Amino acid sequence: MDVMNVTTVSNGSSVVMPATEQVCDAHCRAILTTAYSVVLFGGTVGTVMMTHLMFKRNSQSAIATIIINIIVLHSLLLISLPFRLSYYLSAVWKLGSFTCRMMKKARCYTPSTLIFYSSV
Picture 1 (cartoon, rainbow, N blue to C red):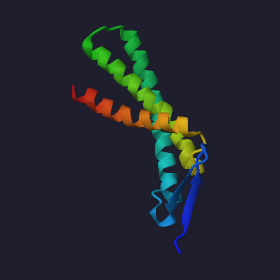
Picture 2 (cartoon, helix red, strand yellow):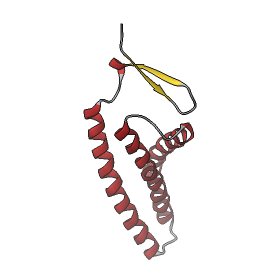
Picture 3 (tube, rainbow, N blue to C red):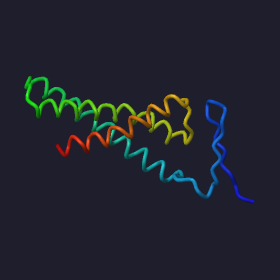
Picture 4 (cartoon, helix red, strand yellow):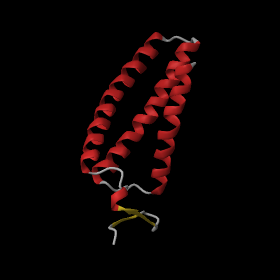
């Protein structure tokens, strides 16, 4: 008989996943937690510095507008990282289904939009 991992979501439903098909074990979570922590710290410092420089310049060119948009999108990604870190540290999503959907949307839209702006 297969070992099953049952996760109960806040809305009462359960997600059943065979233990052999789990994507991320404890070692993987440790690596991702460390990587996300570094990205969160470095990204926050970089975003604050770029925001300060852009508002100090007070330029209204098209390039400045694109850079400000990228800073905003990067900030959205950074806002979602603490939620992701919480998930990797506890191995269970405890923040509700609404927060889960919002963080999933933030993580999907931000990279694709950054790629679009980078190619312009």
